[in-house]
Length: 307
Image 1 (spheres, rainbow, N blue to C red):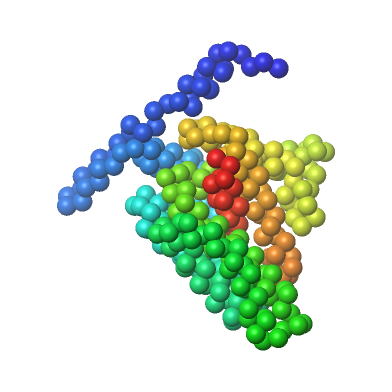
Image 2 (image 1 turned 90 degrees about the vertical axis):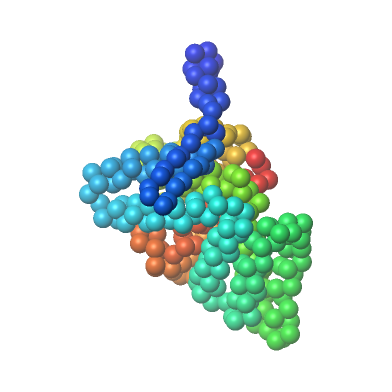
């Protein structure tokens, strides 16, 4: 089926709009802000979407959705401002996220103290290396192998393999993945925002397409709520949001849509293994930080490779 030429022309025009010429100039007494470039466009789009979502949440009357929306309002500046300020602050953001997520992961799967310290060290080191010496990240596979040392020195035959596997995987899944906030720095907020919006689109797709037999089919027994309809919604959402942001490619759509859904399923596997509902309970409406960024942990490295 061929799309009408007028529709194609409109899409191409939308994709190539100048998103870098906007400026933000605010003067309030001794404080003044003068900004320009794509960051201003991202700020406007983010605020607009949050405002529209806030109206929808208010009309829904659901307390759970209000909690989720309020948490998003608090999270976005915490993530967006450090990225906006530069690579150094982005590295600091990645360290904070990696440290908290690693701690939640360690508690969830009951890692012993030596492995927890390894995860903590990687959570600090990997974002710093991504900022200061990116080439040294090639040593990550070696660190995974070195995660066996505590079990070897202790002679732990009963639990050593499990400890090594979970610790090695955690260094890659959390610390190495979040280091890609620095590697992707110029497009980091774009990828984070697209992943968050696509997560919402996946939820909408799961609800909207469940009336169809194909849409209600679970992707995995690990999480019956993750369905083919949700994946379809994620793909549609990724195409729409990346088009609006003016940065779209097949690789980026795959990274954002499929990476986000698979990231959720991956954390579900660990939570099922640990017998817990959430990795934490301090983020209203979401659980822990790991529950909030699980999709991002696959989206970021996939975006770096595929885009």
